[in-house]
Amino acid sequence: MMRITLLLITGFLVGCAAPVRHVYLADQPYPPHHANYPIRIYQGTLPDEPFVEIAVVSFTLKSKLQSRDKAIEAMRAKARELGGEAIINFGQQNRTDAIVPVGGVLMLDIDTTYSGTVIRFVRNNSNNPATTRRITWHN
Image (cartoon, rainbow, N blue to C red; front, side, top):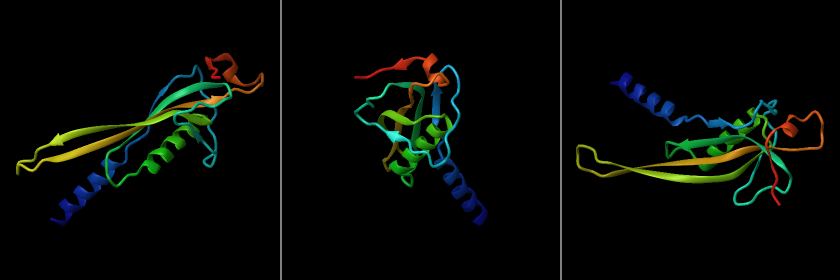
């Protein structure tokens, strides 16, 4: 009995650890940033500087034990790994599934997905690979 309980708890915790998914947009990879590199989050606004889009990232909270802060930090870590400097168009979407167990009790399962676009700012530097990519300017 103890072994079954331990397996169920382990399975629940492993199921809670959702990876950050991403779709790469850039033509070539950027070098990653160090673990403490600050990644800015833009929600509802865009930076004034020109930038290149690197990837679209998303993180789904599958458990009530996870928080919005965990999602943001996981997305920042992925942005650093991809060589990004900020995340734009940050937002969330909720999905609700109704589950009716055998006992007839109605339970709601709500998943929250956070998403955004990882960007890198374009600087006047001939060695910057962003100068050869699709650059998005916003005024």
